[in-house]
Image 1 (spheres, rainbow, N blue to C red):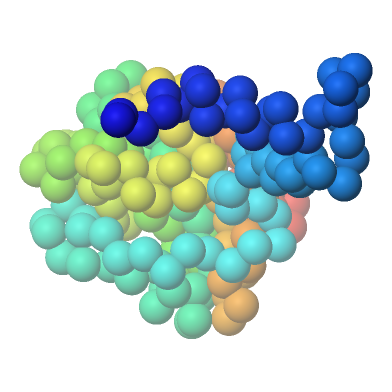
Image 2 (image 1 turned 180 degrees about the horizontal axis):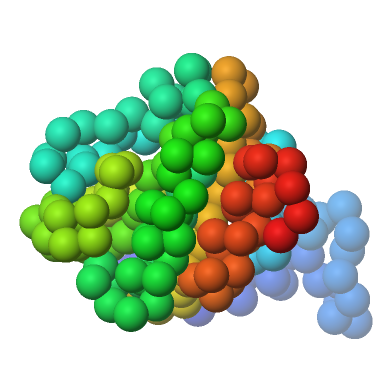
Length: 195
């Protein structure tokens, strides 16, 4: 004799919790535990007050840069741009380049960030004479944690973050910002001046 079908077994279980009128007998009904629904509204990206992720990425030369090593000794500005050597990204990068001496005088370091390869970052840095490093994040490891990845993946919002010296805490998070406004706002925070 074959084992009863699943539907027959289910019907038998249901029959065991119903009285003769078809009403559920509370003490006979099993407690059904539902897995809690995933809260899609929870943002797992870094927020103001959070500590910089402990991530190491290659720069334009393939040299590994660990973010927490920088924030242990200096404040840090990370600016993200959609694609190396494009007009808006060049404006943003050159804005940070032109203000770099004053940024360094305020005890901050600057890093650029995109999905681009180290090779593309190197060409961009060399062409524009950037005095700071450009991080290559083709898998989006840091980009995702910072909250700059666009829906669908592989593209990012132009953004910047500022991290505090010593603690590595995020003190500014600006997502989806224009190139020059990004530079002006970051510079104003770092130098404690009006944008």
